[in-house]
Length: 154
Image (cartoon, rainbow, N blue to C red):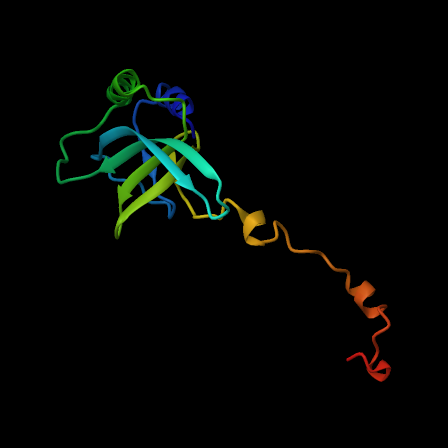
């Protein structure tokens, strides 16, 4: 989800809720401790130079049960970050503490913001010799290949 989509959805809500991939909600007394811009410049395994920019939200919870972040407050924080950090309309990456710091993509189901598991990927499959799709072979073609037990080809 891009920052503009997040702001649009957030502006329609009375309460903010983030749902973890397994279905549990992040405790309602969470804080967004950071809104930032992450710029990453790297070379993939195929030798291609790449630039990536993401918006980072860090969710944090503590035993502070008396506070709850409201949508208008978070919109204010985001607007300040847009102004001060010159945030682009980029994809959002959410950090949340699990066994380690977990990073999630973001989606919305109409009520909750969904933290979506992310995975690593090879960005240069063609350079590594990894096929983009498994070749499909018809078994009927294999059986008609002329290779029979008595032909000596096996």
